[in-house]
Length: 385
Image (tube, rainbow, N blue to C red; front, side, top):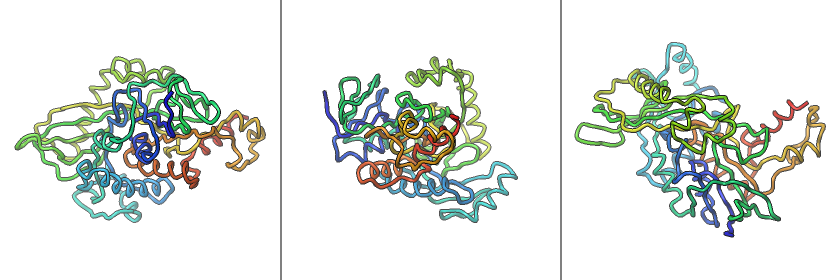
């Protein structure tokens, strides 16, 4: 049986980020697919853009994470991040009025340009290549399905084959390994397309979809551009049983409603929305990507250790009646951690949150409650009476 200090389950952007910050230890990265950044993280366009709006905790988190992510990706490999700015364009007159209010609260250098606001910090990360580079010196096992996990003394045992002191779940929309009712993640399915076009695009755009700069010249007058993304939620038993996440083929996804007709409709929708932003000439779809983003009910991520709800309620049954108990008294699974719920901003949030998680595990630096599982547990408990 192989022994590790840390095992990270899930090799998307969240798992790759966590593994990167643990690379000085004996760490293993596992994934059921055949490489890093498959499914949701592979479908992501890697767009990095500010969140607009009035000041609040979520906007503050995005701003902090975006600053961190830009520096982090540049340090990994400057060739894998394109920073030419992003033009945020209002969707309609009502949205324009909101922008006029939001401009008083912009967190980044900005100028009014064309019909919107141009942010120099806007960037795009090459998602797969970046995850690959981040984990180049990390031990990995692919095509590995975790069937069962149990605790034996101070170690977590995976499939009776792997033993680790610390176990970290970064499994995205598939939370079948977390047997806790309060831990609620919903899958938001969507597509991105890569296209070729004779239109040379100077910077990223965002309106009802995102369009990348012309980051790759295919020939003298032909450029490669990314367009994303669509959003769908399917609420049915098949998705809740998580079997659908094991096979990313369209044939399998038809069971939950992601049909071939919807797949084609999404591609057409992206092209229409992109042309609503600017005219794209001689367009040809090169490749389509699709996958399930993992989103929490309140859009905040979930970072830290996991509360054992059964033991906590046995200790404090009056929690159901609304009697408060300090968070540090909750029972938690030993050396079991999570980074999840990064949604459509995975490439913005994950590096910063991974660093926060590793600092929490190794140095005990506390995490803000709004990003821990504590908020999910307390909301769930109030519904149990």
